[in-house]
Length: 295
Image 1 (tube, one colour):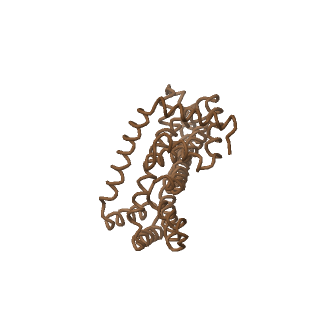
Image 2 (image 1 turned 45 degrees about the vertical axis):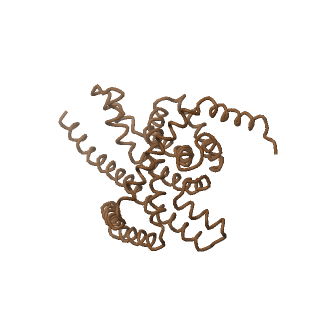
Image 3 (image 1 turned 90 degrees about the vertical axis):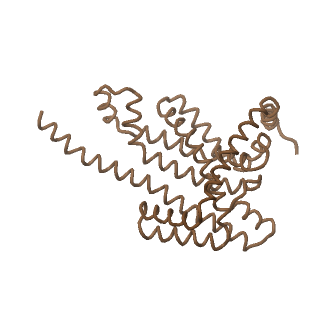
């Protein structure tokens, strides 16, 4: 089946990048691969029991007793199925992809919130990124970076970045105008307004974006097992190739348990930030009334 003019243009663009910037892609691939390996080796060096105690304690702090018990049982189930090494590998890929997505996505979201034209361009680009089938990202990633974890992380970054960009822009746009006016009346610069008013008040929305980015990164890492990403996705892929229901179910269950743990833990930051914001608003109102009475 031959591609159309549009498909030929996309193919020529990727080939042009590969032919003229191959050295840069190789250097970037080596640097990113070193970061991923360092992260994975660091997580793998932590004994299972130490990781179990840490995550259970962390879950107890963030979500309470019931969820901490669930986290303990989930990690024990993953360890019992012999999938702890694959889980650590998947977690390293998700963390790497999420960090890079946030480093790129949050500034883009801020830029879009402060510039209408940029927001229009970003909105169209993000629509394209979110609606393009995930498998399509694997093709140029493999051509430019080869097989392995690096192209998997690159494809995951492109796939999982849109939520944090959108929700960062939305959160900043929803900051109340009277707060901004109060800041300007005290002589705050645009940078001070951003760091001291807009970002703190937009934190619940930004954390929701972080949560969605992690979830999308986890789903894409599983898909990226087709190009050698490893981890739990490779276990699921092995079950598909062998038509082995047991292996496929165990790999899928490991992904589900990891997803629930990551989702609830990251969600807790957004929930508590929202509660803190509401309490600040409630306490601010009496103070404003008292100031008005004194005048």
